[in-house]
Length: 81
Image (cartoon, rainbow, N blue to C red; front, top):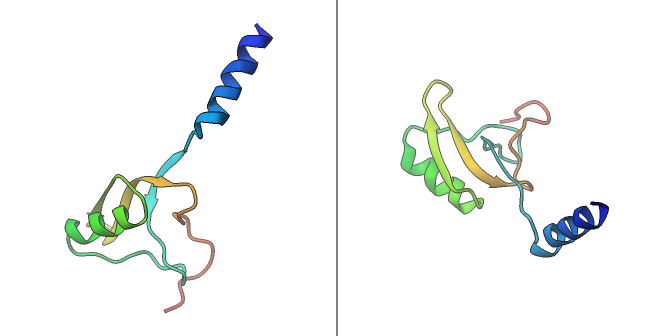
């Protein structure tokens, strides 16, 4: 049993498993990407490596799906304009 777990873990490491996440896009000033249409957000999300993006109208912000882990999707401080 332990051998099977070891082999499965090694296969995952060797294949380069990539984790994906969803969230709002933030710029370098901790501000969300503002939007008015889905096309803009789709373009921005894809440029960051995401699968899909749309303008979440309630917050007027771009929401992305399938982003790489390295992309900032959480606010880390105050938005400075």
